[in-house]
Structures are given as C-alpha cells and as structure tokens.
Picture (cartoon, helix red, strand yellow):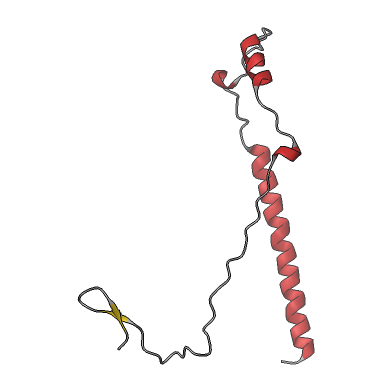
Length: 107
C-alpha cells in the first residue's frame, strides 16, 4: 500500500466514526426523551426538620479534647542497617551445624 491508499482508508474510517458517534448520541437522546418519568415515592420524601436543640449532644461535643498541631507527634521510620558479608566469609564456607547434644560444631 502506498501513502495515498492509507490516507483514503484513514479518511473512510474517520467518516464512519463520525457517523456512528452521531447516531449513538441521537439515539440516546431520543431514548431519554421518550422514557417515562419516574415518580418519587412517599417513603423517599424528607422528614420535617425538628427545631429542638439537643443540649446533651452539645455538651458532649464541647467535652471532647481538641488537639493542636504541636500535640501530634510524627514518627518517621529509621532504616535498619543490613549485614554485609565480610571478606573472610566466602559463600563456599561451611555452615555450623548442631550436634545431637544441641552444641554447635564446625564440620
């Protein structure tokens, strides 16, 4: 394929995409227009506002301790140094094993 054929294909795909988008938007708008409206049920309405002030709740709120920024401690983690193998210990060295008596022995 040369560049002119590729350009023709891209224009064709672009036109079909535009037409498809137009139809999808049009059909969705039409469905929303003809759809029946939903009625709000009786149980979903708001209750009337009670004008009484609950004094015990206000006292409980005022009794709470307020923290300032200085009261809060921010703890940052400290890195733990990792053990590095020393020059004397080579990976091929033998590992101490325990004997039947529970004592460590070097074999």
